[in-house]
Each structure stands twice: as structure tokens, then as C-alpha cells.
Length: 162
Image: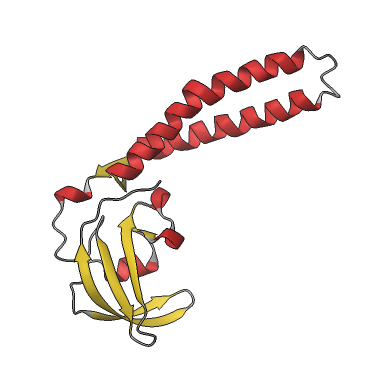
């Protein structure tokens, strides 16, 4: 099984979610199912069926998180030099056509959220920018076309997923 990189911040966030599901959500839904069972005929008991559906969702998410965490290689971006773009780096690039500046941070796949500037290590843009330094220009081949970028800055910035 290949280990997947993930920042320490993302790893801790997923661990907190898993703990919440196991220690709070799972016991709560078991109680809700027991209460709903007490309301009589299960065939027509919407409360019972809703609780069972929620239980399935919780168990599926617990399994998913457990699987993700089991194959994670935790990387603390604070311990890496960020002279060039690498995993955990935050960087600014300028679209050379529009002169619009974008800020991104390269993170693990489960942490990615492009709308918030967190791009997956495996994304087409990240793959093409790994190893680049300020001043480098690239013609990024992306799913929606090609974009010319210039790397403006590369640095470390503490990640917050909240």
C-alpha cells in the first residue's frame, strides 16, 4: 500500500473528525435508534429509518477516515525549506495574460479545497509547479486549457482548515 502525503494539519483535522464520529455521533445515533424502536411498527417508523440511514452514513465515514489515515504519510511543512515549490509550500503565481495573482498551498488529496487555495499534490497544476522557484515561468497544461504563469513567491504559511 502506497503512503499518501498529508500535512500534519490535515491529519489532525481528520483524526478529530474520526474521534467525534466514534465517541459522540455513533453512541448518539444508537440511542436515537433505540428510542425510535420504542415507537412501534418499524415498517412505518420514519424516525427509525432516518436514524438507521444516519447510522449507515456515520459508519461509512468512520471506515473512510480510518482507511485514509492508515495510508497517510504525515508531513510537517514547517520542517521543510520552501525555497522552491514543494509539498506544503504556499506560493503566489501570476497569470501572465490577466496579471491576476493566485495564492495556493500544496496539500494532500483529502485536504484539497481549490476554492480556498489548497490544491492537491496530485493536481495538474501542482505537478507542473513542483520544484519551481520565484521568477520561473511555465505554460501550465490544465484540463480547461493552457495558462502561462510566473512564480512570484514561495514560502511557508501555517495551514488552517477552519
